[in-house]
Length: 65
Image (tube, rainbow, N blue to C red; front, side, top):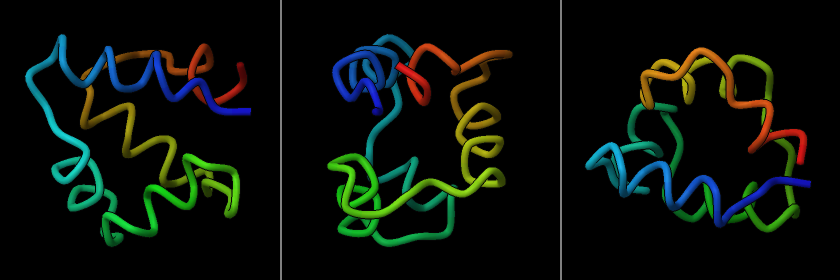
């Protein structure tokens, strides 16, 4: 299960947006929300790109909550 609250907080803390994350991942905003709501899974590459976008070494607390 993904910790959506932690992701949103991290985005705010970093001055980033959901739209920006979706664009960086190369997916639509609606696809991102489907992934966040558990309707679809994040691919490993998307998790790695999210880490790069958020400039964090580890996002396990978000993706493996």
